[in-house]
Figure 1: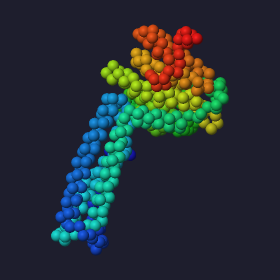
Figure 2: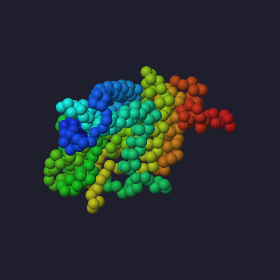
Figure 3: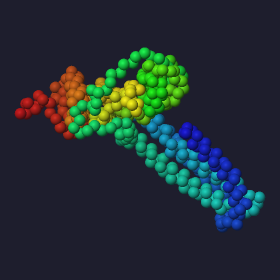
Figure 4: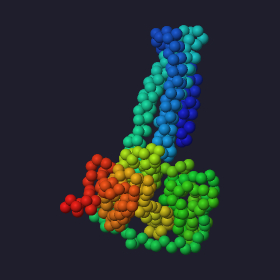
Amino acid sequence: MPLWLIPLLYIGTTLVAGIVLPRLEAAYLADYSHTVAVASAQAFFSAVSSGIMALTGIVFAITIVMIQFSAVAYSPRVVAMFAGRRIMFHAMGVFIATFTYSLAALVWTDRGGTGTVPLFSSMLVFVLLCISLLLFAYLIQSVGDLQINNVLEEIGTKGRSVIRTMFRRLPVDAQCEPDIDLRPTFEPGSTTQTLTYSGRPQSIARLDIAGLVRIAQQAGAVIEMTCAVGDTLVEDCTVLRLHKATRPIPEAQLLRCIHLSKERTFEQDPKYAIRLLVDIAIRALSPAVNDPTTAVQALDQVEDLLRRLGRSELDAGRAHDAAGTLRLVFPMPTWDDYLALSFDEIRQFGTISIQVVRRMRAALTGLASTVTLPSRQQSILNYRSHLDHKVEYSDFDTQDRASAMREDQQGLGLSRGLPPDDHQEDT
């Protein structure tokens, strides 16, 4: 459901209720009444209707300001996580419903000079007012979710959820990827059909892998996806190719298996959580902000995600039918891709900060001790050597260079490792 439709449904429902319910109450429940004076009821309904609109303006003005601040302070892509929350639009709908129905109750108070106040409509307005105040308290509390710790935790939680859903854990004693030597080599063969994209730029949010495999099996073909989840499709770009197909497949049928969105989503894309964390880290490292502690906090979440990926069976980007025949090939990141995405930009912008270098070195050492596959361990050690080489030729003086080579989970505060030269001198 589009988000803008949520408050619209509240408005429509409340308008119908404001027309129908007071009439039903007057026709069948007229004997039920209370002792509230007409003037008092009118004052109550007027205060609720006027006050709730003022409250709506204040709440959403504060929320928009905080979201815009977050876009500047953290990353514009983080805004979508909070601006697109359904609770915001439900709250707007409840506020409008309270305003609208209180006006309806006001209209039916002392209608025709009867001197009566609709009992059940008054109760309904009171209930809506209580719900509105609870939602107001919740929205004010949710503004605190825009604090950096909560933002990083939210992104990390989404990343962990995607990893848990997409990948299986490797056995504790695994020394190589399962069946890595048994995977058949993909030989494209003749290209029988090519699907190109036409339209405004959109990102691939999700692939219906089972649907694509089924389509390929029916046509006796192999589908080769040339775009991965998270890629942006632009005019005339090649989306996929069909090889060895016995019959053409309608493009609409293929496109139904490729779910598009205006922007990247977390679904089927564990890279996106890392991308957002790195964005926050490098923005914090810019000279205009100069906040390496935020970068260190982002690295906490990045390391956690990498540890989970390092203990997982990463997808090879191939799918087979029930008979074991290869039907779908799609791009998937390797361990080295995840490693580069996590650390390359932070290393480039963060080697001027001793705090960030120490935290990165601690993260790489921790990863090397956690992963079990020798190939992944070697990639981590190679990356750590690259980081050390970068520090060695940095603008640090001798003492700062020695300090940067120490591993520190907090960045600055608790050294856990000594550089080789210092260790030898102490010995």
